[in-house]
Image 1 (cartoon, rainbow, N blue to C red):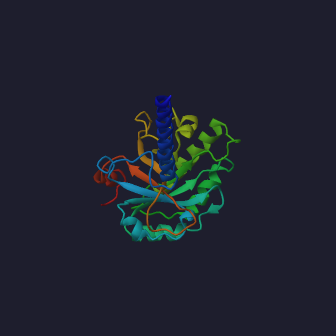
Image 2 (image 1 turned 120 degrees about the vertical axis):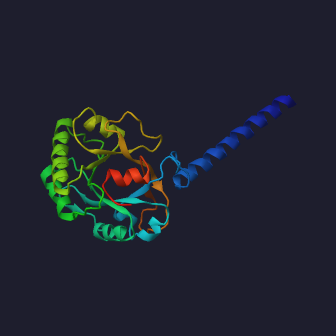
Length: 249
């Protein structure tokens, strides 16, 4: 009986220990101090952030000092919304020496022509800027627009933005959105994929160029209500990065 009791005690202690470890891991993940993907600097030396007004006032020199090379900045959403911090972020990030690009949050409920006009009105043409970005993601679980409609709108925006800025646009998206709207199409775009649990698959076509690996990153240098900042990696070296986008290092 005593042996059985000791065995039960050991089992209970083991389970308690496991629970404590799990609680610590969950706490670290929720706090942003630990994440599923921690890509090595050797494999992915070129790192960046994407931001919006949620990060509030951003001290871009501080951001740059943390081995951050590029920044994608929210400019517009739908046909009428302009991010209130875009101009300040755009100018200050460039002044801090970061390679900057602007992104548009794509609306399933708005026309492609008016969304394009909103972005073009807001984002200046800069020879050394990164290509314009269309942020394509589901934001209403009860509203999944027809594939044909979304593809038609995307084709319009890709063509118009490419012509206006002279650069092939980037599409930021999730795997689900890529499967639904982009897979097996002939659209010309640069792929920026969100993949927070595992590295992105090598099967994407076109091959992914940017990877958002952590939406709960922690850096010094911003004062908004949002505690976290999105962290990204480029798929190659610094020389490959500057060559790909025709910019000087």
